[in-house]
Image (cartoon, rainbow over all chains, first blue to last red; front, side, top):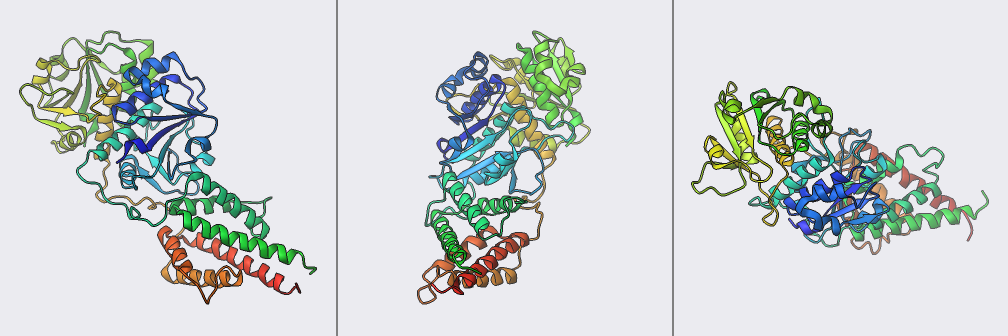
Length: 249
Length: 249
């Protein structure tokens, strides 16, 4: 476990107290990298007060205008989610997720996303994730406070980091680095463009096609060489379409 | 595990916000019995606000003048403690402690004590406990917020109460059956054929291309719907190549 490779990303947080509580929860468990995507109110004295002796995390927090800017360089992105999705995504509870993260190669950058207090992460935000994380709660009152949710996840990360031995991930030894979020996004755009060229995807009625393909490729975690192969195939397909289009039928 | 036999006892709490946060943390994890030994300020609007939808726990909270009055009828008392004791006491971490509590006879009344924000439980208070509980934290900043500590303990109690016997696979809930080996083999053949059509794969010098693509798709375990989508894309690509080939260059 390499806590210095893990960033906690709060998306569009409303209450500064929750930002402070998150900073303290992180530092208590040995995490230090806080990212804030469009916080409503920050910096704020309520955040400082709740952070207690973790004010240094607020001072070094990275504030961004977009989620992409916060996670673009990450190889593994986890999104916390309370809801059932229409299209199920790979899903683990907080403990299994911590084990999974602990088993990643130490060079990988990891982001764990926490959504808005009132409605969590949007579907579009959840779609960029390799994995969804759920914290088991009571059926009668499942709405965890944001900083509490961070506390539980940070605690599980700490528990696994101090556990005697963690299982080895099946792709811990690999021959090519795994793709970053930014490169994956370029691939999805190229894929979508090509499917439109092929007339396989109708932009006027896209249905769930791209969502299903995103789920497929985020599940597999493409390495950079695989990404280049797939983009090479897309480029060739586009050339053939262009050649065919020059022809009168 | 019988959550209705477990009471959370806050001793001499200073900040009403922590009482509210505790109530919410408990209810989120299915606990309902809150005891308050000489709280400094209670009831209080800050407690109500932080409790959110767990105000019912504040309304039914039992306020007592002494610790004995709060735990006198209990068979098993656990005290949370951050410090090393001069005389070592039976000590477990939060997870082991939850397992221990789950293994108690269902008729037993259990109390878990949480001390003051600034200095925890006194030695005299810790001495009445059957067991001490410690939450692992970072060495550099070990002072957990009170409600956060309750959250972690309540979470571990919930985890043990709902623990399945076998680990859950991340794709256990899925919307389409996973592809059979036979269908995967047909897909690989179709893929190879298409890559030859596209002139992306040279059958005379195939190199490791198909091996890499096989590794990619066997890693992901395609479901049947994804398989159909990919084969649909291949079929479209083949049609465009055929159209282009009818053209004189």
